[in-house]
Length: 280
Image 1 (cartoon, rainbow, N blue to C red):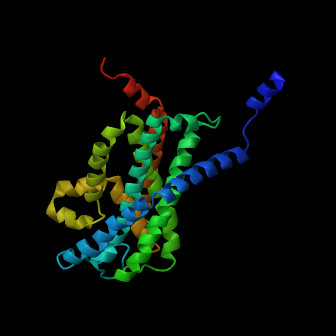
Image 2: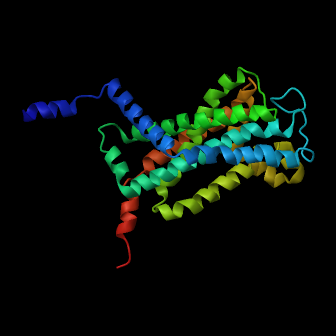
Image 3: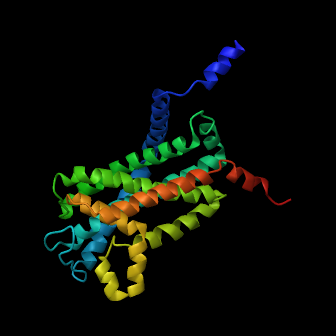
């Protein structure tokens, strides 16, 4: 009997096992998302405030010239909408990484990692589940944005889907990389704010790069090397049925780099070890 158990334990896992794992992680994230309804509305209120209040105040001061991918003059609301979509993905990615730190400290992440499936696959499933759940918030935001004049081509809503998924994976991988090196939950909020706000404001989400260049050359270069700029441009072009290959390459490469670093550096014992080093 023991021999049979050992043979079964060493049997290779089939595709059904991988799919079942992904479905389980996705279901867990979805149930957590549904149980935290305030998280859904707070993720929408933030970009809507920018779209309705901020854009109304800066509409006259920040006129937008004809730039790619637009073929005519546009309103400021139309310009910032793709960046606000990426803002939703950014905050969701950070929120997901915060939950990773919490799960690690509570020990539930160790239970998940007891699965015979590779650790890298489990973490990628976590990233994919977060990305898919974030899509509901982005498309809800785009539906509301229709009422303020943000009306991209109908096919743009479908064309932007792969771009949104790739950007969500990139930002989720960044958050996972951060969570893999932060030892305690209390330290995460400060680090998260240190990453979110510079990443968002030093990008083309709110202002075209040529306007940043007019203001300051070094600010322009900071914005140019910011991966969030390329994420915003990838979504912007896809929403209007075009593609920026440079933005795609940068986002895909950044996603790969942060995913590898996060998987290599993730240690479910990190938070537990930090607690064990308390004052003697």
